[in-house]
Length: 159
Image (tube, rainbow, N blue to C red; front, top):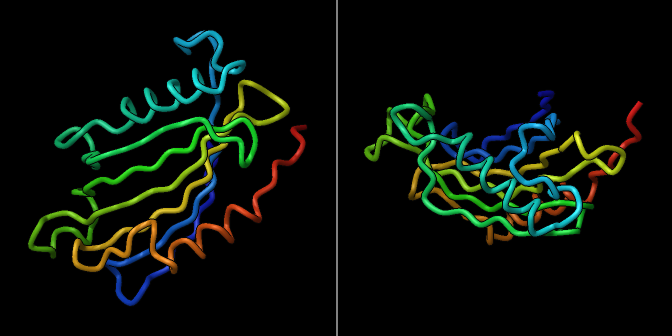
């Protein structure tokens, strides 16, 4: 997996916003949904199953999913839109909070690259903060950051 990310503090180290792009390989022989690349609703189920599998709850994992939605979305191409809210118990800044975790909200697109059904790209904007700091994905500040990031995203031709 290739990943590039940017992180910015919003006032202090426990309140941040991050934007990331990651490339994932999709192995058709391991995908339990044979028509994932043909039917957007099947692709969304494939993404949802991957979200659940890749985020085991503590103590094995770092994040405890509180809620999530995954649905087909064609804004950036052949994609599933994923919105999650989780408790991050593994953040180095969580140990100094009374709750013992930071809240994290993610708004992401998980897309198949237009040139290949075996290359997926995840485009994500997340906010992480103590419960009393979290602005939320509907706040004007977070929406502006998210919309600028997504508006500037373009797929490049695969070599």
